[in-house]
Image (cartoon, rainbow, N blue to C red; front, top):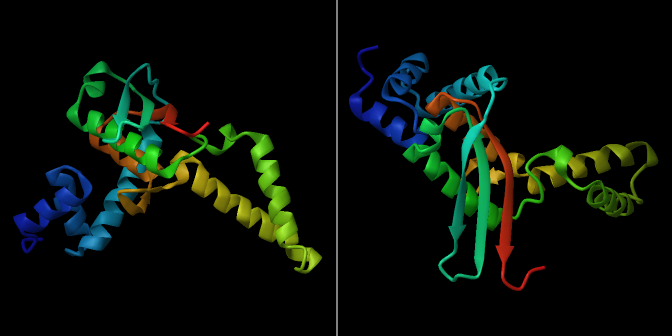
Length: 197
């Protein structure tokens, strides 16, 4: 399609971080519709991430961020396949952005299966009390919906990314996998705030 301008490709690249050729292809595939092209690239990133998910991640890096007040900090460990990618500027930027997200969003675990079962059960009990006035046959469904929302708010991979709430942290990770061409995995994180236990 010849009416896809270099400026449109450049703007899409700036929005998504995808390569020039991928951006052009996405715009061609979607008839020049930028929003659809963004979705096209996100789906492609997910497919790429799924293909690479079985590959070993024995390298990686630890990123950190200390807030300007010196009273708040976060660290994250992200694994990747090669030392070459671990030293890459995009990978390092990803680590820093993750740390800032962790500091602001205060997740309790990377993924659902890592959330302390005592905390989940405590939330479930609170939610059960909140729905006592509802018909008995729908209480469990409502509570399960609230538990899903709890996971979405407290699990790092499911949280909306603080710098772009249209994406989850998992979406951001998938984009990095697609962009850098390697499997990656967020292993663990730490968050420290002076005055919090």
